[in-house]
Image 1 (tube, rainbow, N blue to C red):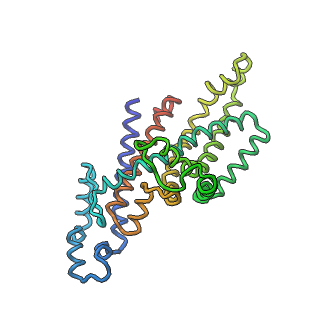
Image 2 (cartoon, helix red, strand yellow):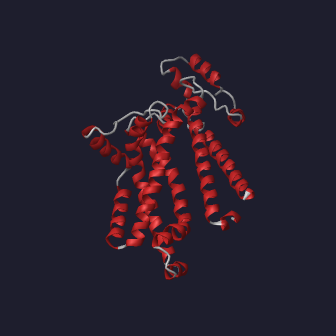
Image 3 (cartoon, rainbow, N blue to C red):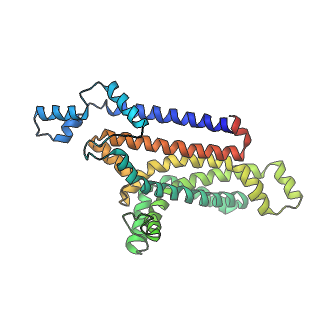
Length: 313
């Protein structure tokens, strides 16, 4: 198990390095001049040159890359070119908001999709047909449109939830839950349809296996067969899809944060990209990839626990 964990961890470190390196060189190959953006179009050439020297943009790109990489390894992601604030602090301030949203969405996705998928596989008939229809609808409707409709109905018209803004958990747990409910539901709908469809298919395959028929012939309760045997064997495929949906939820959170006025990682990333604030963009990319690696590692550990054969892969 230790070798399995070390192999996955090593692959994650390589992924973070490759992604960060590619992002660094891509952001430095755009041809735009960040110094001109910062000092403004009316500044003279001497002012622009001074700002370039201050930012280190007059140095060779490989030298700048090495300095950034060695600093990042030691936990220093640099300073924002526009606000002069440490990138680590800027990203850390936004992280709880995005994590609250994405974790709430993934938990909601897991709970609802498992229930829907199992019920559709066991009952069949109109329940199964309804799942297929709902899945197609969920795939077709963008999550930002779902978010706008939820905000209009449950926030504006009914007043049950706040339409915009975020309340930290430490400040008020109740208001925190209320502030992320609508965004999390909007974000989770598409992912729920995907995972529920996968769960349904896996359960149908497992319920058709010989060992399930043997358990039924021995008189085991249906609930015990479903929860203790069938669901565990169907879980690996659904868990893999769920871990992939986590990545999709991170990207989808960018739009949802805009809709509900949440100043999370997505909002920081879009603002930094639009202004050309390369250090912040790099910081967000590194943090996002690290989160993806951690989630995939946890998913691999769960798969290894459910299916010991995976540990030798």
